[in-house]
Image 1 (spheres, rainbow, N blue to C red):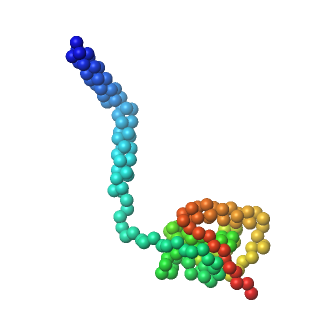
Image 2 (cartoon, helix red, strand yellow):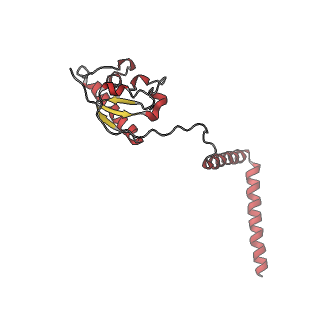
Image 3 (cartoon, rainbow, N blue to C red):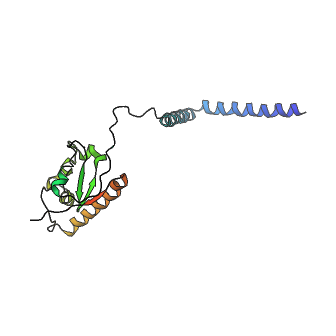
Length: 175
């Protein structure tokens, strides 16, 4: 009697699997969905291997800079062209290390004019050409432009500092 119930369970399993396979392979929609599932599963398993990583020369990480006050002349050294390769941008008297974004801020990048400079006026006026090489007191900016500067500063603080960057105050050398 135990053998008969065992055969009945095996028979039910075989009929279930058989009916499932028939259901899957007789409908074109199910075949397409099965194909999509197989491709996605392959991509998930392949990416977890780590085999799809780009191989090439790995640049050594640049050590963190210590917090320090800087003059504008010292800030200009951090434009990405020096031997250290570090890139810093000043926004609203704070300096941010944007070296991780060297494709954007480094030489030849779309924001390379900001590298090693105080970009506050340029960000307030939305013009890359407004980057200044000397002290800029920003007193002629409207309240709307200053609000824009504060928003940029918050964005830099949120996005750059969380990437293990730092902020420093600029020490202005006033005449």
